[in-house]
Image 1 (cartoon, helix red, strand yellow):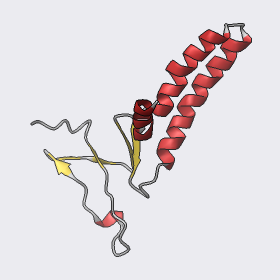
Image 2 (cartoon, helix red, strand yellow; image 1 turned 30 degrees about the vertical axis):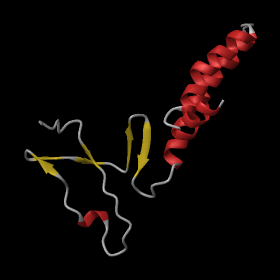
Image 3 (tube, rainbow, N blue to C red; image 1 turned 45 degrees about the vertical axis):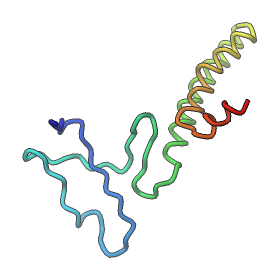
Image 4 (cartoon, rainbow, N blue to C red; image 1 turned 135 degrees about the horizontal axis):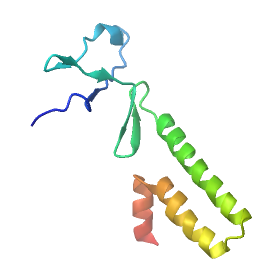
Length: 111
């Protein structure tokens, strides 16, 4: 397998107190240094190496949904029928909120 060094990123996850991230030498492939990142988006899910919490992902999703809700608000002010607003909400906002959510997947089987 050939690795595309332009698209490859390095994420160091280390919670120890003995060393800092500056002590870890940079990853080098084919005499090219790989870019070191703190957050990375993988298949639409934002992963943060600093604390491994969902904070960065939640902020990303909120930003994405806020833009879509603003568009829906403008459509409602323009007089678009409520049934169309609900359709746009389900396809544009709800789908973003439920993406990669295991609970939503299992809840859909219960209903």
